Image (cartoon, rainbow, N blue to C red; front, side, top):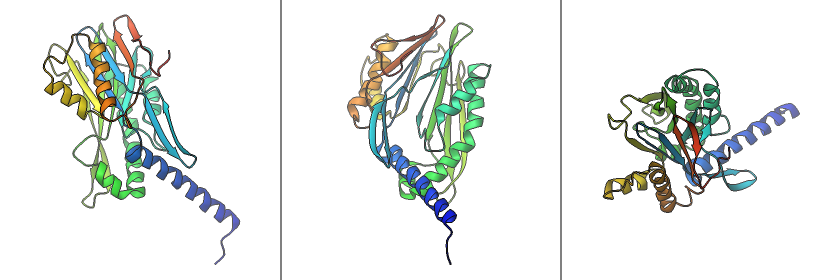
Length: 266
């Protein structure tokens, strides 16, 4: 049976598309970078910090560059850690659409969760189809695979909302469903009723160990402590988490990017 030139062109285009997906999946899920995303807050302000390393593999080779991972949306910021992107899914772009709407931070994260849930599942299906063994090693039904936070000031007090995406696999290990878990502060997300809280998302093993094993880890300067948490992960896995570190403090007067500046230039 002969194949027409149009069919050949379609097949070649499809093959190139899947090759691109495969290369980017390999980059992000095995050889690529991780993100360390930190939130430290108290009743007066919120500090958000993140590393800047971005490493992508395409058919043109591998590129490593610094990129801003904390996005300003006027009176608040958003950022993601985990499985954030492939050729058809981009967490930041979906968050940007949600951020254009008028509403509270809690409402923004709910809109984002609804908009991202199905596209995120489709990304996980592509991952499993292209790299089933790697998917098996890196994705389980027991933990979140993507976390996105929105943070700002509302009614003169700090406000944080986040959504965790979890993949539910069928008995054979294939992704069948994406569930979301939304938390907010003020609310149950806060570790302390006084609203003193801290969280590390994405690559976080070394940072959490440092806090739990170091007496008097906290200095009382949230910006210093948030930067230190990211730096701990950079020191632990410099091939996956890298400088510069971006830091933004949000209080009743607005957003303040803290020196030394990283990749987020505003």
